[in-house]
Amino acid sequence: MTLDLFPLQKGGYMADDIRQLIVDYVRKEYLDEDSDQEITADTKLISGGIVDSFSMVSLKLFLEKKFLIKIPDEKATPEAFDSVNNIINLLKELVPSVKE
Amino acid sequence: MAYSEKARNHYTNELTSIRGAGLFKEERHIKSPQSSRIKVEYPPGQPSKEVINLCANNYLGLSSHPEVVAAAHRGLDSHGYGMSSVRFICGTQDIHNQLEKKLSEFLETEDTVLFPSCMEANAGLFEVVLDKDDAMIADRLVHASIVDGMRLCKAQLYNYKHLNMAHLEEKLQETQGCRFRMIITDGVFSMDGDIAPLDKICGLADKYDAMVTVDDSHSTGFVGDRGKGTHEYCGVLGRIDAITTTLGKALGGAAGGCVSGRKEIVELCRQRARPYLFSNTVPPVVIAASIRVIDLISRSTERRNKLEKNTKYFREKMTQAGFDIRPGVHAIVPVMLYNAKLAQDVSRDLYEEGVYAIGFFFPVVPQGQARIRVQISADHEREHLDKAIAAFAKVGAKYNILGKKKDEIIAAYGT
Image 1: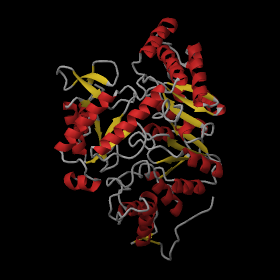
Image 2: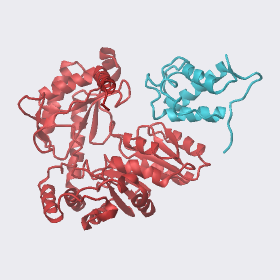
Image 3: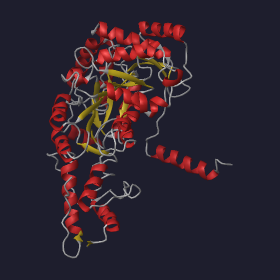
Image 4: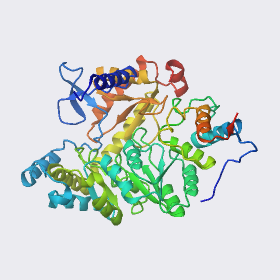
């Protein structure tokens, strides 16, 4: 299996770059091609009905592959995945080199 | 005391929050056999009322069919009531194997194994045939029992946008390194009546060397020209590796399910599937009646033809009446209302008019997709359908939703 890692910048991962990466992924993975729904870093993903607990596995797997991490089940909660900003907070716990 | 006040308070609070969220499910007492017309006691303590039933999975009207009931009586007399054993100890009678053989013949599969329910067939199947080196790729709207079954399996879980073949292909490409891949879908999706494009799914499965599992619970007995299911409807008989389905809907509606498909997969279920190994199977009385059901629907397509005719009539007349009906051909007819309270109000008013149809809303369906789910039966006569359509029209006029498009209903009631 080939690695598809998120590129590490000098000094770490920049949080805004990751925000954009996740927003783009959510648009592609969860919205229909003709959807005009806006996705921002604060958009409610789970409680807003865009991502459900079953389809959330795609997002979890995507992050695990991009950052070569394992997100423990106890941390992969609907709250932790409820917005791109929440996900960034989770990543900061798991990937020390994520910087604002 | 082990059941502490702390525990009691915790559960009480949970129940209060379920009520507060409007998600508390009440049971209504039906005081007659299952049918197109039923006697219902609701609210509790009130005199029973006869209503037209638009929410049973009794698609072929066989739940109380005299020949099915008579076969059940005969089965009870000849094979007894219970088995007091799981299958592999002393819980397999001759009729269990007869029914499995008949199901294989009807579904045109290699072999079949019965489970106590389709829920348990789905719970048992995946962990038996897939392991951590494998991938399950499921439609995002598969039934909850499939989701539970996949969670019990060590294989990597992927899912694709509902019915989106391009997205499924992406997932097949993404999982090329896995040992085995299994595409998993419902044949017909229970909330929308959508039919999975099994011809395209089988095409992708061939292209990417993947297996296909279909839960055909809302199809077996009536979808396809001979009622064999979605695989017949889509022209892929013999190409589905595992079909899970139920005896609890069109096929008499009592209980029981099965896995039917490749003989090695079926045999592995017999050897290893935990719900099969550790639970009694379908009782003899249900087996005897189910054999009769398969005989009836194999001999004649009259009932599925009538269901098809009823469905077409109901869909056409409701559309003419001005309702927003999700397009399709299936006997599940979603009458779209978008707003949860509106769905509940329309359901309550329909009941007042003598029509029993239930509102569905988030989280059972996506946010803003509330609807009344109507299920047509071969047991409905034209007069039942006409009365139901008239009741819908009266209630629809009251809420001023007739002839209104989605945006207009949402503008008036919100989501």
